Every structure is written in structure tokens, then in C-alpha cells.
Image (cartoon, rainbow, N blue to C red; front, side, top):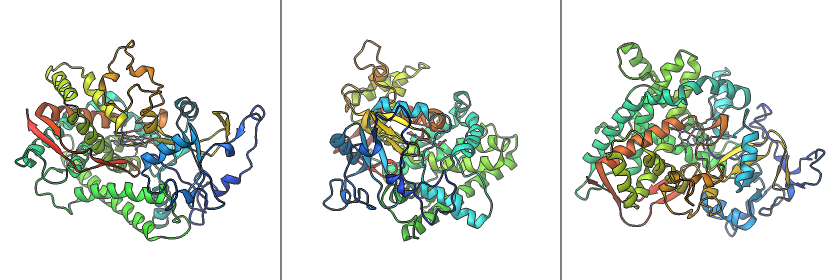
Length: 511
Ligand code: HEM
């Protein structure tokens, strides 16, 4: 789903189809230069950190190296500072070579051309689990979901689920159910406050509970009761939340960092396979529960049908897989976006007040609400960028880029560049509602600099749901509380997602 980087040839993947496997020998692949591209420089000449045979750029990531211990955000920043708008980072053990782009026009060139059956590498370890590890147990070839499929199988799946997941008028039907979850969460915040109006317990977990409860009403058409005060630590809901979090963390280790799991079974690889299985089983638990409820309530429930039930009518297999992927893709993404937005509004009280006034005006259109969320996704995004594997050749910034290259679009870095957004580091929701003649007007920025939900036919399938959830809950919070923050900013840790880790110094005062 999110920024990802790896694909190599190995004995573990030897049986995989050719689109899955890319040889580590890519660095020495002879690239045929077509007529008209001869004057271009070779991709081998793209600037970037030096590399050694076999080890690639590993030397820079070990103690003493220039990238040692840098978090992802600082790493990409340093790449741009040191090498400019296009940077090549040679593959390390178990990783492909990556080309980073910090130039919005070049990003648009690739994204617009790769818009038929775009390949985003996804999560190789999850893909391995779903396609090969599980297959060896199940002995049957099933579609594996949007995150892990490519080309024709991806297209078939995506075409089936698009009408149910992306049409604004269909998503709008969940407004009441999502709002009920938001109101219940507001009541929970109220009940969890201590004498200083701070939340007892871990704020991050609370946001995950809200996100899981919200996505469940869409995916399964049912409430999971995540706000039940008697919910134990080993309840399926809490275990699912932990599982999703561990998933993004272990995926970072296996898929984003040098790792030998593709050659030999490491303890981390075993842990990941177990984790993916746990997630599958927990999802099954909720899906089966929802199916039983469906049977008992057939025709009686006034709620909008969930994605599960809607897809059941089209393709049962797709229904199970999609519902399970929503329970995985829809939790940490929405939760961290919400936390970041609350933090930014708490530290910009005048913007929070302006938003409150818009909400209290009861006008149907809420442009400032949307603007506050858009701006927080620009300044503190949960996803740092996006990727594509090229399916054709390109001329990018004077370099010839052949097929099968992994390109990383560094949207987080570009979103904070002065050349695209004036006063880029400031939280200014007004830029999203400003008139054309205002220097802050967002339309002056290149449309491909900032792209929080990705682009084109492979754009985030949960986009409309995420927007509805965050807008609805944010509105309820700001209507009910004056949100304050004290002390230093929270830590943001980048694994496969950007996690706002706290400490969470929020204060929720009644209005
Ligand atoms: C603020 C929240 C979210 C952000 C910033 C976000 C961002 C993204 C991005 C950047 C992509 C890659 C798109 C591309 O390749 O062009 C993506 C894909 C995806 N997202 Fe989200 N997402 C969010 C919420 C969600 C939610 C709530 C769900 C589930 C309901 C979800 C499910 C997915 C899935 C299944 C894909 C893969 C789509 C495909 O490959 O066809 N996301 N998301």
C-alpha cells in the first residue's frame, strides 16, 4: 500500500512469476538505448551515495556512515540536500536500487504515463506470505488483494471494488453510522479525562480504537464495540490493533531495510509470517461474526450495508479479502492523521477557533474543516511518499530510465519546499481556501508535489472513507472541546508509516 522499495531474485522467490521477481543484477543490466535517447545520460550516472560491489550503499547506513541512525524523514532530506532532485541509491542486501525524485514535474511524467496498470511494489514480505507461504498450505491460487496484486489480477480486483469503495455518493451513506462512532468517541474522551482534563491511558491506542470502530461500520456494516470499558488487553479488537501496528513495524525491517529473509529463514521472517497469519485469523473472526449477524438480521437492520455484504453479491472471495484489507489499511492511517490534525489545531488555537466558528454556523459546506485536514496532511503526513515500478523507458531530468526501475516519489519532502508552497513549514489551512490572486493559493503549487492519497487508477481505495471519518470526528471534537497542548512537540517515528508517538500532552476542556 505505502512507500516500499524491494524486490530481488532469490531461492525463496525462485518459483515466483517474472513480474514478481527482479534480479539483483539490475545494477549491471545492459540497458538498450533506443534511438533518440542516445544523448541522454545513463541511469548509472544519476548522482547518489557511492556503492560497493554486492554491498551496494550499505556502508553509509552502518556506524560511521552518513545515514547511520537517521530516521526516514532526515534520510530523504539529506539525499535531496546532498544530491539534488534525482538521486540513485544502489541496492543493499535484499534490496533493489531506488531512484528518488524530488521534482514534481518528473513525478507527474511518470505517474501520468503509468496510469493503466501501475505497479507499486507493495509489501514484498506480505506478498510472499499471501502468494507463496500460504499457498503451500492451501494448495490453491486465490486473488490476494489490492496491496499485493499487480497487473491483470490487480485490475480485475480493483474494478470490482471501485464502485463500492470510491463513489462519493455511496460513501456518504455511511455518514450517520460514522457520526455515531464519532459521538461515542467524544463521550469516551469525556469519561477518560482526569482532573487535569488529560486522557488516562495511551492517546495513540484511543485513536486506533476510534479508527477501527469507524472502519468496521464501513467494512462489516456492524459495530465492534471497541469503546466497551471492559474491553480487555487480549480482546480481538485490541489484538487486531496491535497486529496492524506490528505489521507496519516489521514490514519496515523486512521490506525497507537490508535483510536476508529472501535467502534464508530469519527469526524476523518467522515472526512476520506468524503476524500475517494472526492478522488473517483476527480479520476472519470479525468477518465471520459480521456474517452471522447478517444472517440473523437479514433485511431487519436499518444500517447501510457494509462493503462485505455489498461485495458478497458480486464476488464472495473479493468480499472477504477486501473486508480484511480494510481492517488493516484503515486503522493506523486514519488514527495518525487524526492525531496530527488535533496536535496542529491545538498548537494553533486561532485556527481551531476559526474552525469552531465554521462548525457552529451549521452551514452545509465546510471548506475550512477540509482545509485544516489537508494542511495537516501536508505538514505531518502519515504516508511519506509513493512508488512505482516503471513499465516503460523515460527521459527524466536528462537521464535515461529503463523499464523495471523502482522510483520513489518523495512527497513529504516536496510538500515542504518553498518552491512549491510559500511559507512551507507553517500550518496555514487558509492556503487551501485562498483566492487565486492570493500568493498562498494552493493552485499555484505543482499538483504532483503533494499527493497524500497517491494518483490515478491505483490511488488509495480508502480515500473517501478516510476523509469522511476524519472530517466527522474532527468536527465533533472541536464542537465539544477546546483542545490544548503543552510542552514539546510529539515524536514522529517513521516506519512504513509516520507514527505520531507522543508523549501526548493534549488537554480537552469542555466548550
Ligand atoms: C489518511 C489516511 C490515508 C492515507 C494518507 C492513505 C494513503 C495511501 C496511498 C499514498 C496509497 C498508494 C496509492 C498509489 O499507489 O497511488 C494508498 C493505497 C491504499 N490504501 Fe490508503 N491511505 C489512507 C487511508 C486508507 C484507509 C482508511 C484505507 C481502508 C479503508 C486504505 C486502504 C488502502 C488500500 C487497500 C490501498 C491499495 C490500493 C491499490 O493498490 O489499488 N487507506 N493509500
